Structure formats: structure tokens, C-alpha cells
Image (cartoon, rainbow, N blue to C red; front, side, top):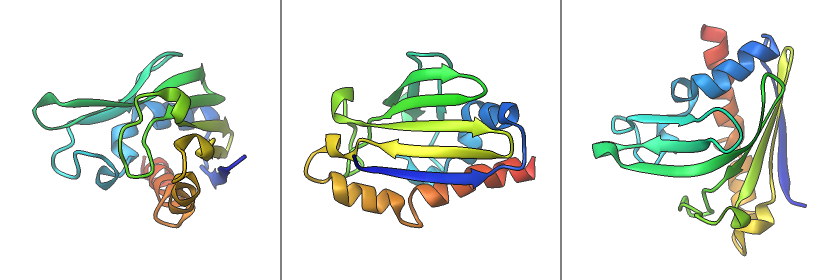
Length: 150
């Protein structure tokens, strides 16, 4: 199975980390990693509860749903589909998308992006990009940076 597994020290409780990860998503998610881009992004977030949508709202109210919450277990665990493909295109069919799991522990998070094979022939290259320093490591560092500023 193809996956990325990372861990980051948070220096805070699982409760606070879960709250910031889900409730303050727009404050830590890099705007340059959205379809709207910096200056045009109106909102980005994760709706609470199983079945909630992961979404972006861009210029003129354009909305793009890029995932669905599969497990909402505050403050310990969050699992959602990652319906963004190798070319940064929406993947409407969740059976062709990977999954993200974040486990919140006191003082750290454990992160996994799995099922890259579901993206098809470009899945391995996609994993390599998301595993590179500019992918998930940078994105998670942005989350930890917000925790440290608050």
C-alpha cells in the first residue's frame, strides 16, 4: 500500500490541536495550495461530523468540495477523503481518491495520506510530490507554526 506517514510535535494538548486543525483551517492552510490562490480565497475548511464536507470557497462564491469526513472523533482522530488528484484536479468519485488520517496525541500529531494507488497511473508520482519538502511536510509545518503563534 502506498502512503505517506509523518509525525509533528505540537507542544499542546490533543484537544487544542484538534480544535485548531479543524476549526481554524483557513488560518493555517497555505493559500498558495488552493485553487483560488492567495488574495482570492474566501474560505476553506472542514465541516464537523462524519459526512461533513472539506471545501474551498473562491471568488464570486465558487465552491469546490475536495473531501468528505469519514471519521470525526474529537479530540483523537479525524479521517477524510482527499479528492484532489495528481494534476491538482477535483476527483468527484471518492472511490478513486486517497484518505487522510490524523491522530491527535498530547504534544504531537500522527498524519497519514494513504491509498495513492486509487489515483491511477499518476499515483506514485503524486505520492513523491506530496512527500517532498514542499508537500505535506511544509503544510503540516504551517499548522504547527499557527499552534506556536497562538
